Length: 448
Image 1: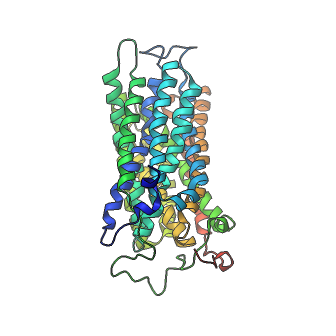
Image 2 (image 1 turned 180 degrees about the vertical axis):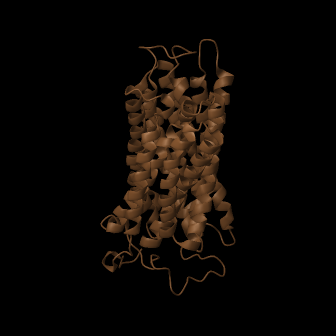
Image 3 (image 1 turned 90 degrees about the vertical axis):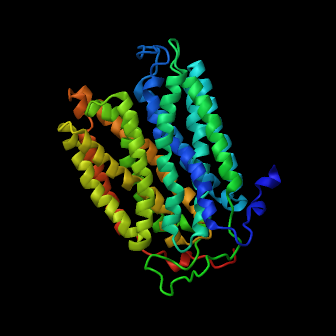
């Protein structure tokens, strides 16, 4: 097993098509992207004792359940930062296999937490173990695809990361239907659903680990000639991960990712209850809404990252922040009008740019720091996602609770938060505008 997972076993033979690598990346990301659909479990997890309704004093509160997602995102970023350099050394197959074990195992441990009604076990399962699986799975194919597609790095990272955005499109209805199948008069079906999903996701992620290949050293696509004069922010030099974290560019991009994610993740994490509470749709329709925004999250990752190959990464992020701020500011208007089509449209546009930010950032890093250790640099930058995974949901839940306590109707409880998030995006626009080429003193001078 150890030799089967070694990097040397997955170096592609001459003639291997690079287009066989994206399916391996999608197999991983479509599975771990289920995290974006975890909100369909929020309300059922508050009824494990009461079954049909939450039992006060015994069932968990909704605000408590939302911490699970935040913990998972924290461990996503921490594990990506910790194991990024290890991934570059051992290769994507070993990292993908470890991700499958952690993510699938996280569901099983969470199922035990549901059975015992132990919140710490539930968090340890999906939040900690599953979060580590998220981090390993997230970064494992990205560096590999950038090396397979030096001519189109934005499109390459979009192909990999769009799967994460689309994971809820599969995971949300799968979770809802499994809970319906397993539900009984004395049980919500969450325990059985977690076990089933753990097994299913492990199998699909294992497929990705088996299929993935890395290009031989020095490989280039047939006919590819690097441009004689690269774009202003595209370096021909290499920067190590240890040097990258000493540059101002790294921290500006950290802020860019943190602010973009903080704005979007709070909306995404509370998507199901928010649309039910603001415009009054049913739980089933809300689950469909989660799946729909997952589709736009997924499509935006490929569309915007591919567009960034044409217009540049900096310009693409400028669009995210300016257009995004305007759209966030319009969400309260749609809610006040009780217009489901307008509300859904605005959130879908937000999700395209939220997802696009994730897909564009690895190519942005590649432009600034080169390909030598882009996976490790990307892993360290994802700590911004960890921080945003806490800040975004906490902000939106705190503001909602404060608004309702002050007498604001529930359907208007998200309005102030949307205006705050619009302001957050303006700050992100400023950070992006300050990004400049990396100083030559940080360039790597040795041999790889």
